[in-house]
Image (tube, rainbow, N blue to C red; front, side, top):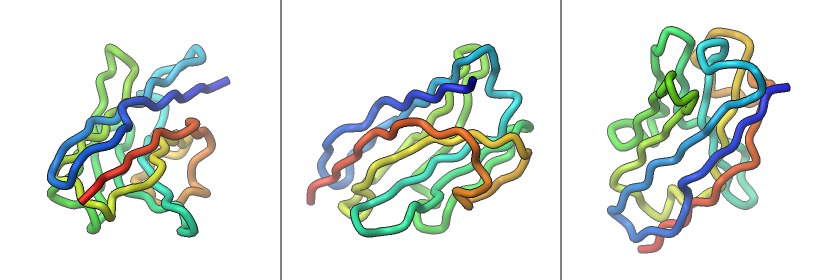
Length: 124
């Protein structure tokens, strides 16, 4: 059983930064999965913002390119999303997800395991 737990969300002013963490557990390691960060604002569809495969290749959505960075710490079995220069449009619940397929995908249906989410709120 794969378990994902996000942390690091909170409330910040526009222009601020946050780093989200996602720890994976369940007798497995990050190296077994492609990983992704998604976000969902009220009344909107879940949107992929960053992905990383088992070779640590990354893909960043155009909407956050230049501001968000995805990375892994294999020793800590933890996935990160560094978010800089945040704006009110980034306000959403953020989720990490793991996929058994090794791809850089922004499609939620490509991911099998999901965390419970962490809320990010950006005020202007």
